[in-house]
Image 1 (spheres, rainbow, N blue to C red):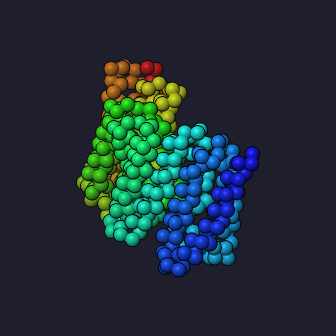
Image 2: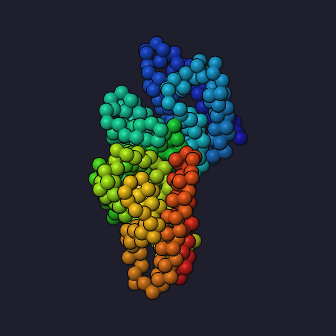
Length: 440
């Protein structure tokens, strides 16, 4: 590294090392809460990092800075004397969090991905810095309406403030910087703010420090290339999914974080591949709502984000394969449809096992999975119905087999519930392989 880069690294490190004790003194003097102290550090670090494009011309010094910065933060986390002393501004909160360790690698990754584009770097960092801090402080002090997120909870008020702040962190730089016109800036900021809010809502234990900046970069990079009609179309898709999920939330056993995750999954399927890829997971959600309402299951179960993770394992590989061109559009759509059919067959198996007085057969669950979850996606391929006969027959067999296997695995499984959801997702993905028989 040259002299200017070393000077920048030393300056940022000096600011970090001096900032911790100064904020600790300030917090004690004015009686600031642990959450306020932690977010002061968060904002100070974020604003310092937002200046990186004007300090560094390449990513290497930023990675060096990250490696050096993680060392003292790791030592503070490991040693109680440091953690209770100068590190109390970071570790004063009771909930477990790894945010301070993840912050620096996330910044370095976004700087590297942006490759010199100031807007693609600064906007995600501002959202991470300002919107996250604003949402956390408002949610902590004034939040009344809670929703489950991971092992803890978030508040509706905090999420709304996060969304507003994220919108401003996107809209103002895009407009003032002259990167796009006002209409483009408005639609880009609106979509990015809502998606960032949902990503923050499903993240806990400080993982939002890496999910938000990296996720915002990937979304912003795509949105910047789109024209107004395409941006409006993506907003309409997002709005439809939000209405669908939150209309059914009253009868869903999914907690708030899982509901947000459901919207993100559906939006990801629709935008990365095609809107038809969102139909099978949406059908699973609708069937879930109908079943829970019919049998009044909302008070019997509390499903978290790992339930959505299971669906993601089943369908997202096909979505990514379609987007990358690794498989044909028709094959990938059939794969998602078959995976969601197997998923619903296993969900039906588990639900009926918990309902006394209901006779269950795996074949019935397989047929339900095919008709309810697979059919919405397969309708788009119906003009090639002759080619679908063999894959569908093989897929129904796979759904029957997945229901049968899952019934036995569930009865014998004694591990953590997340592991069972992962097993279910992997089974669904394995049973979607009849899609490879589709030669169109």
